[in-house]
Length: 390
Image (cartoon, rainbow, N blue to C red; front, side):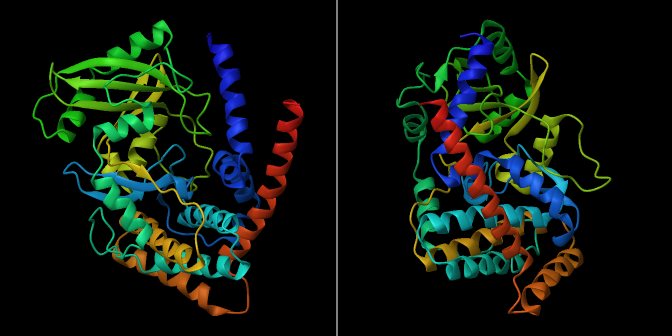
């Protein structure tokens, strides 16, 4: 398949994914969110400029292992990371949670309480030290995720992604052969000294002698479909452990950045810097590089890495999850600020939340406005998709 045919197929696949549910549409249409931010920036609290996720929906948080095999819930996607307003991450996460609440047929009062719990968890995040794990009491769904994550091994990762327990990449609808030039460039990239150091460190080894077992174009994600993405299996020596590398094209961020923010001009370096600031468990096993002149970042995926996936939830469950995830994001933000700046920012949010109990908060107003915008756009997307496949 040539590049033109590949791009056309991936565009069609992205449209199909986005038509499956309102939540999937929200995940795949960050553009609508940023357009809304551009129009409504004046109504949002202006927080200290720090590295933010930029696309902080629920699917972009999950269990991540550190170099010692310990697991923490952290942000796990940084395509849109910028130095920006931390309130933007709260709104994006609030929108994602509100959409999940509606998918669980929960009443509007639950959504209101859930958003209040989200900000409450954020404000009470412990940022007194730079530990990678926030000191929060996880709800039962999060406890289950972490427990399951800790027991996963290579065979679980391989079966989940490739439907095989063997260290190979079967060619199917999710894994395609690379073009010849792409394969040559990817093979060369795997000998990068910094990448070797990162993989060796995660394996607890002092040396890394990479043997590429297989490499393929990886059909993964939603908004990233159409950009270069590769799965690579690498073994340390002839009989050493196997590592799964995810090579992903780094694109220009659409998320708004703070005025005068100094960020790396190279998009892969920007992603790497944001990841290290927000989620050290992942950032410390990422490398920025290039494939055929295209900026890419490479991350080693471990069996313990799992995103948060919820189906139908009760009201008390989603409120507990919102409070916990608010704390996770608050910890990721707060660890970049000194104590006085964090307290000032968190106290200001608390004051605004409690000042007028009978007046909609800025977060509530933002999320409700965004829900209505996405509802209309989602239905129109489904209509166009149905007409195109009639």
